[in-house]
Length: 419
Image 1 (cartoon, rainbow, N blue to C red):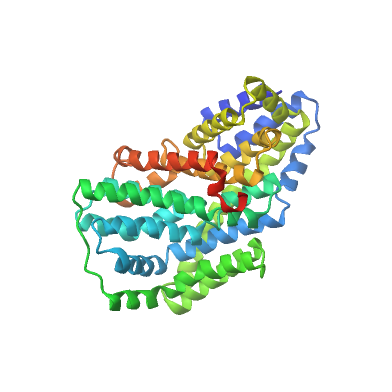
Image 2: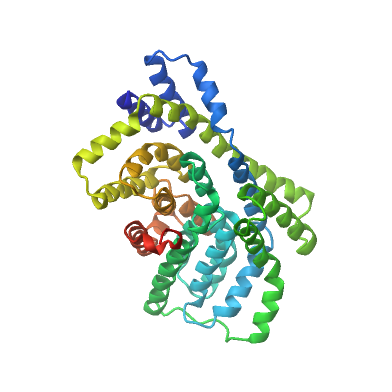
């Protein structure tokens, strides 16, 4: 049954069938062969979406789109540049810091790349930075968008693994900071190597001026995450608060959006949310098939028969995660692979929170590894450069992120909540 399930799924993917339909059709094939009434497919599709925590997904997506596509992105970048622009290659640091900040707003890698890239890539090019390397850096910084909370993939993992969204959010900060740190280090090295220019000299007056303009954007993650961690509201309620705050700031403070713009953004966010929810729904029968025929347990026994060393097992899992990220979209990979890995991870006594963070970081790296490299495609669309050129330029940043991935994997103390 396991062979039928995975072979059918892979064949359908190779034929170009969308991931969601490939998942459910593979499940239907196994159920039909096993004599299970196909009414079970509908029941499991409905049950898989019947979760209060999933309310956070469409609202965080909408809030992120509102902030990323409005004036907020521009004023935040201006503030960051006022602080760090005077350093050689300082605009590269600004690019990474802006990516990290938008990670705390959008929860989406593609949205982070689009917001920061549209604002900074033209400015980087204007000041003599290599355009392909600039696009690659911003695409790499976009991967932090799904690691620093709020994070849509973390919500999905928490629902599937039955873990606390709040706990995962708390443990996502330091890994995201480490990812940003390695990207800044590499970008500073390249700034010296290619003799990138310095920006305007430091001006305290300019810092204060840009801070005042950016304060409304800076407050958003503080309100959302402060509310979650202080216990004033749940992650799902925080997503609702984020949407209301983003609308108020965009419409009444920066005044860069009217009903027409809001409707356009809402339509785009609805499409993104619908894709994710369809995948979640179709994963219901898939998960039932895995559980009914004890496929994860069989995989776990097979892997443990190879080695009982947890370091080797985790290396194998890490390799699968990185490979999956190359070929699969982030949400799809988490929804499909989490039920498969959980029995194995539990058998080794590894914290499911630690594994969740590792999983999200590893799959985020797939956003800059072709062929399914959404951040590179976004950067390519902004610059109109061939995807191949940006892919070559992203290699140093990719290697740095992989290094951080294995550090988080083998040094759990880097995640404070697990110490």
